[in-house]
Image 1 (cartoon, one colour):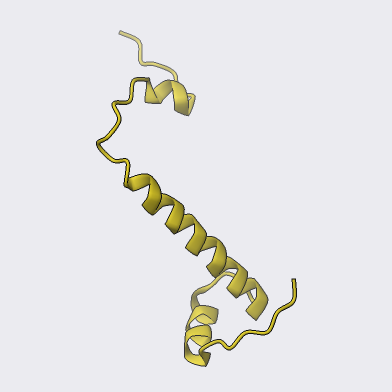
Image 2: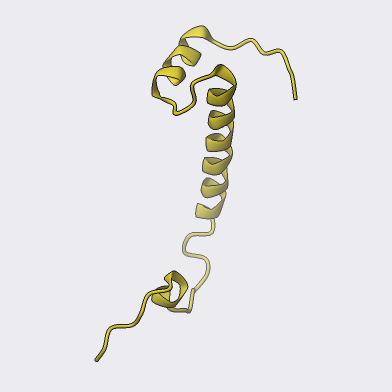
Length: 68
C-alpha cells in the first residue's frame, strides 16, 4: 500500500545504518514487523505465572531423550 509519511530524518538515518534492508521501504517494513513482534511478546508476558504448564520441552523441540 502506498502512503505518505512524515518521518524523522535522524531516526530513519539511524535505522538505515543498522537495518538489514537497503531501501527506506524495506527498513520501515522491518521496523513495523519488529514492533508488532515485540508487542505480541509483551502481551504474552502478562500471563507469566498465571498458568501451570505440563509437558516435555524435549518432545516439543524434537530432541531425543537421553538414555538412562
